[in-house]
Structures are given as structure tokens and as C-alpha cells.
Image (cartoon, rainbow, N blue to C red; front, top):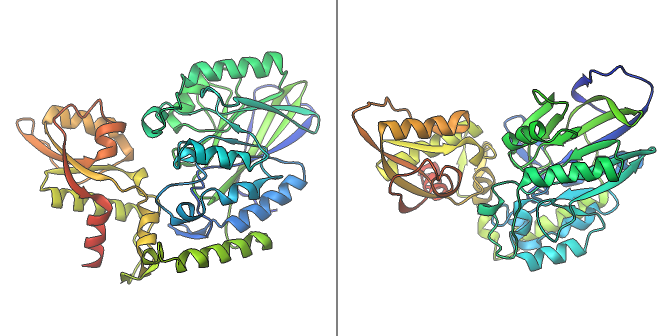
Length: 429
């Protein structure tokens, strides 16, 4: 078995002989069944991941998904096949967190998907959903819960779903798991942003592991400062799988070690899954409804990195909106563009969200407040701010109306222009 970037964290209590429990986790798969190009080389592939996870499951590991297993609009796979592969994880997954995209096709479609699986789909702060589960591994009681992040209220457009406070729900889940269920290990498997995971660990003692999700963050095993909680995050699209080994003695976790396992060509495929994926992808590309997505629209002599694509996008936004500065988030841009044939499906994989450009005028103080709020996750065009001037700012509808709606206090004006389409024009001209 291969291990990458293996690191160990030992708790402050003295280590005694105990039972070792292996936990595996992936998140934000978003219907990426095929291997894909990244800044690190080729990664992913559902057949590879299932082959590895099934092998580990047979060896006694517990396996979890952090949710967001489908994604309406991009890639085209889930538009055609919905949640077809959810049932492929029956007998492999022990629990899945509900992600915001898992209800992209409506509650009725989700209910059909849930009925096809044998593993529980958890969300502790969503009424009507199971909040936690207790699993046994080598005589150790492993308590698992999941959360719907604070942003689900804006992201999930289903009037029948109402989301409670994540901290309060987590506090109750941990209490039940520790006091009533007598869990030796307590694990949170998703689905909220990394900053909220850190706040959760500080606000709710008793969580041993938080598996990162939702932020699409690649982060190795680390302890959250000021807590006894460790966290690890496997990025996105099955590029990596988080693998942890927890040693438990006397009902407590004594040590945690582990790291990120790359899903790449060195990981043998599950043959049945590989055949399924090839046949379904071939049918997708032949389907008249989706065929244009795979039609060549140009060629690239060299790859374009994720950061370079993000910079190109904000420059394009500023130019077409005739703005002084443009702002987006780096996390909006998910993949680089490889050298060779460019298709709309490749561009959609790199920019999966069809955001509209929105403009508003800000004085220098308000603009600086926005840039400070956006922080290092932002991608902007360069601008020397003059305190005496006002500036026309171009951004995305997501930032203006959701992520930074409290900072965008200016009058917001939709442009009617879509970021991805304007980038496409610039790439092929």
C-alpha cells in the first residue's frame, strides 16, 4: 500500500497498547467519474478509487464521503446520469454527509437516490435527516456525525429544507455520542467550509477528527490550534483520499497518524467500474443533447494553470465591464486547462459555475474593506487605491449576493455578461 506525505500527530496523553482503527474519507466528488488533468498531473478516476476503497474495506477500514457527490450543470455526467454511481458504493461506504449539491435536482430526485443506497446520509442540523451513526471497528465504537454548513441557507434552493445552527447541532450530537452511545472516537465527516470547521473544534470539545469538505481544500493531517481535534482535507473530485489510523485504549484516542493518498495511475482500477464508466462516458459524448460540449473549439499550445486561468478571468471581467478593478475567489476556479484540444466540457470543469458579472461603485474605504474581507482566497486585477477616489468594481453574482453580501453595500448592477462565456471568447479569439 502506498502512502504519500505520511505524518503523525501524537496526543499529549502517554501512549499505551490499544486497538488501531483505520478511517478513509473523500469529499466533493461532483460526478467526476473520469481521471482529469490538474496542476500536479493526472488525478482521480472513479474506478481507481473504488478499487482502493474496496480493498481497504475488506481489511477492516471505515469509509466515509463528505458529500457533494453530484453537480448540476458541470460536468455533464450528472445531468445525464443523476446519482447513478451512488449505489456503486453500497458495501463500501459506511456513511455520507449531505452536501449542498446533493439536492441540486430537487428533493424528489434526492429521495430516489437515497432509497438506492444502503449507507446512511447524515446531517445533524437538518430536520428529518439522521444526524449521527455509531459504527464498530475492532471492538471500538466510532461515532460519526455530519453538518449542513451555515451557507446552506443561501446555496440550497429547496423551500422544504430548513437548516439549524451547526454549532448547536454539533454540541448535541457530540453529547449523545459521548454520553449515551459511549463512543470511543467521535468524527465529523462534513459538510462546511474550513474556517467553520476550525470554529467548531474550538466551540465543541470532544471531536477527535474533522474530515474537511466543501472548501475543496487540500490539507494534510494537522491539529486545530487550541484544541485536541485533528483535521485533514482531500481536496476534490477524488484526486486524493484521506487515510487515518487512530490508536484507541481505555476508551480514548491515544494517537493519530495518516496522510493523503493520491488517486492516480499507480492505483489499480476496479475492472467492473472501469467498464461502466467507459460505456457511460461514450454514450454521453454521443448523446445529441450533450455532444456539442465535447466538440473541439480550439487548441492550446501549452497548459494554463489554475491560477493563470483565474488571473485571465478577472482581467477579462474588468475589461468587458469597463471597471477599475475585478474581484473573484480562487476557489471558483477548480482545474487548469491542459495543452491540446479545448472543449466546452474542459472549460466547464475548470470553471463549473456560470456566474454573472455584477458591478457597483465603491469609495476607497469600502473597497479596502472588501479586499480585506476577501483575503488570500481572492484573485484581483492590480490597482493602487487612492483614498480620494471612488472605483467601479466588477465581481461575480455569488460574491455580491451571497459570500460578501454584507460588504457589498453599494448599488449592485447586473451586467448580463457571464464570466465563463467571456473567458471562452478570449481563449478562442
